Length: 453
Image (tube, rainbow, N blue to C red; front, side, top):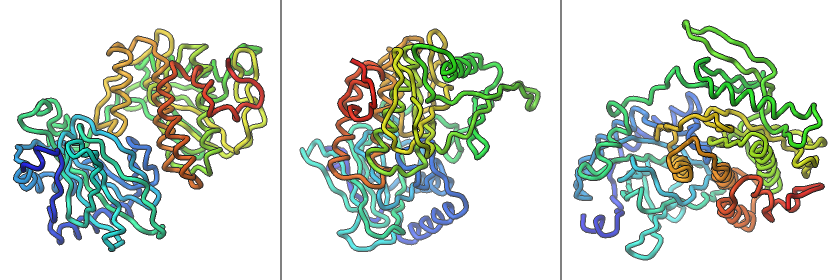
């Protein structure tokens, strides 16, 4: 108890009994066998199975609470649970959690490797000890820590058996007498055990072999307007314009349909490939080509329509294996070609975007944005809480995020490559716009012809 109060973290041996871990391990594996589920809220682990507020996880959230309270000396309110089945090659970058994770309990449920020196360690920036704590958690063992205060993560899991797995259960709580007791109780749900409802007021995106279909409620005038403006930008190639980009999905047909007595606008688009979050990238050259194509497309849109995407996750960047023989854009009257790395990038989903005076207030549900909540908070700080304000730097927030995500999902990547990308990810935040970002040295070899001065 004193140790937790002093250092803000604590290891608890055998928090969950062996029998419960065995049951949970088998349950989670069966869950994956019956339908692989990659959380859309976290594109760092596109090939990793996990679920928010699974019913067994929620049960264990309540079961473990009294024992955790006894160890740390705090009365707790449960917020939510999450489990994930990690694979070799996964990397958990150092990060801090959102407010609902004031007190986090991370429990190893099970693995199929057994030697102690092979355990994938959880690392915590133990400020009070001026060191990085390296915790080895066997099945049933738990680390309890202040997730909002202490940065934590895991290095890349390097293991030579591709069939290996590591199941981790995250139980989240807040201090019943702390600042988040009222605002984060049950993660803003009515009670533990209830999934987050999806509102029929929201738009939806369907991606399949026939293409991309965006279905938007007709009453959502702003989102429909933004999609139409993107159509114009994407089709300007037909005109002799100063700026255009073919890096955005545009509707080849727009129709109104009725569903349950309600009107929706459907924007039918071509098959642009697969979401970035669900593909394996070949090497750093493909990473740089993807980043360059995104930055060029967004830069054109910044110039032409004061564009901010505001939700540029790995699920809203679509990748197709395709040679790029034509210019990818025209920027300030100059056609832009790029090195051919057999990847074509298309940006989709503008439900949270802003153009000129058209925007949507981002009242983001924190459970919707489990692992990107810091991005939304950062954007909110940039615009000082006023989403009508234009701030192109928000685009660079997302490019920085995508860079980190791709580090962990690139097949052939060296230690030097990782350092290069990590440094670029930090530099992204120094530029005021994506157009400005194109001046960065990392893109020097991407241009075949011109570069902004």
